[in-house]
Image (cartoon, rainbow over the protein chains, first blue to last red):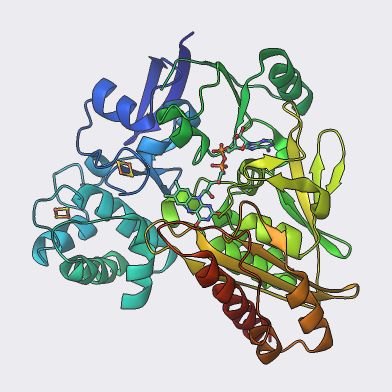
Length: 157
Length: 263
Ligand SMILES: Cc1cc2nc3c(=O)[nH]c(=O)nc-3n(C[C@H](O)[C@H](O)[C@H](O)COP(=O)(O)OP(=O)(O)OC[C@H]3O[C@@H](n4cnc5c(N)ncnc54)[C@H](O)[C@@H]3O)c2cc1C
Ligand code: FES
Ligand code: FES
């Protein structure tokens, strides 16, 4: 039997009717067309599917859509300003070249923002520790860590 | 994932009745259950979402104990001032579970009901001699853990909260599997009025108390005393991550590290 959900996604009210086994990432990508959230592993390991639910980074492939009922969800598409200006963390990833293929990037940015919200002056060690749940197969992480530090400084302004 | 029906009860009584009637599974954070359902390792026909149950929430100091609601997420426990003030070892343990995204969703109740042989919370519950409060009864830690993924819980029994007595000293030291962050071996040591307890996770099919370490630390609560204990490797896990002998060695090493950080 289908379940009805109402939640806020990137500032807009969303009402959806879903099969209970629908994952949050499936609702976002397939029903709402928000394909910036990626599925890397589909087993809760890689963090490519990271979005914010009520301000906290979560892996949307390991959560039922129904678990986000009533919640405020933000995806990578919800970060830029209305005029298209990138979020400071997005800009930092671009400037520091914190990506190669870009597959992990949207999840990295979402995790980075959660981490900076909790640790505005995060050290390099804290950044590395806090990104434990996000895997990158390309960069070797170095420029990602640089980007997060620069994004943190920009977010503080 | 196989199809299932989702229920969202508003009271513990309704949730328990639904579990009893449907033979379904409770859903907390879903970090273990949803993952298992995707792999079809679990295939409940009914899922009972516990997120609407207010009684399962909240962290409180209650006399000589800290009571943690079953639906408290690892991240909430790690950042709780009540927990950090009374039993900092619990906050540190919570902060070491998995990764940030898992800690933001996974709950203590889900972890204890699941009783993964390499999970962290079982070590704290057994090490601190905590009491698991359910909708039916209070289960002492020594009677709660029954084996690999097995607990004293009945199919329609719901964990409401866990009550941790405040120790004199306690600490947890984990040697994490570098990929999953689960414990290859994790040791919780606690010194309190009734004595010393040492609980080991990750090393065997379920969490267990290590009597030789408890005896040694009761005589001398020092890292050297822990390190001098030769733990028996019989019955410990053998897998691609480590042999029983390796794990047995790690138990003393992690116990010594825990004693050092307990101060
Ligand atoms: C990538 C990853 C890394 C992880 N690393 C670690 C780690 O390092 N250490 C560690 O300890 N754990 C780790 N975990 C597991 C994590 O801690 C889970 O959150 C936890 O095991 C289950 O909690 P949950 O709230 O998600 O429960 P769920 O997945 O919702 O439920 C798990 C089981 O418990 C039952 N249940 C849930 N709540 C109750 C209740 N109140 N009463 C009765 N039954 C209940 C459910 O029916 C189900 O059978 C990891 C998980 C992932 C995905
Ligand atoms: S796709 Fe969700 S963690 Fe990898
Ligand atoms: S940039 Fe390719 S996976 Fe990270």
